Length: 290
Image (cartoon, rainbow, N blue to C red; front, side):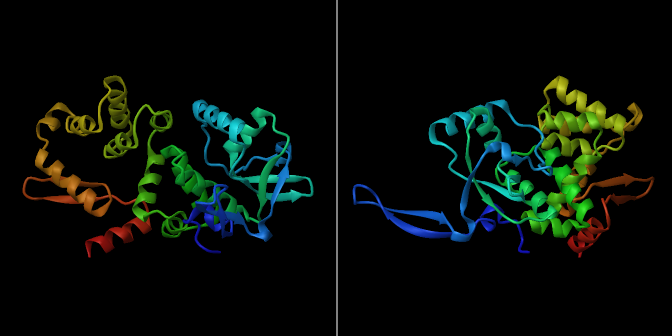
């Protein structure tokens, strides 16, 4: 099966036809579905939702806007479904359109029927949402982890399938190591992904939760949050001993290796500690260092 990083275009074979406008002066390029991918009109009640849909939160405002658009223009882009039996289908892509159609009480909606494996359904649902920037960071990370677990993918394989750089996938998965309250705050928009990445730089749930609450209650920017971490080195005596130049060096190492790093000073000299998520990330660090 070809890589799905290209998104839904790879699912809907198309051919281009040229149409002359009613005035005769403009030639419009448009597309039609290939004959073997005929559009069917089916009842919304015949379509089950995709059990692998990674998106758990649907903004009411966005749904309202889509409902109004469909009320005026109809459903322009067909939903993608797979066949369960003669009268029942399962959704692969287009849940917002399906919800909107049901809210409007539409009797028929356009669909394209495709054959899809369980892995296809997960990947397509994930890619559709990623391409439209509709998932929050935790939903994306959970979807990545499910694909890794269910189909024994490596992070490199997954990155290629979804069209992302491997460090981007690894950084997304790290968000799942945060305490549940912080993950919920990220899902609800109380903090940004930038805040979350700074929080990940702290060791231990106590420090991470302390910083999270400071961000929320103090409305700290990402830059303010980064400065705040410098004041969270442990006891008061330890905080006094923080070497801010070392913190800048740690940040440079993290950026270069895409991994969490620490500089630990000793009476004479010190050591650099580089953390890795799994063997793949370790190998990636080694490659970057070489």
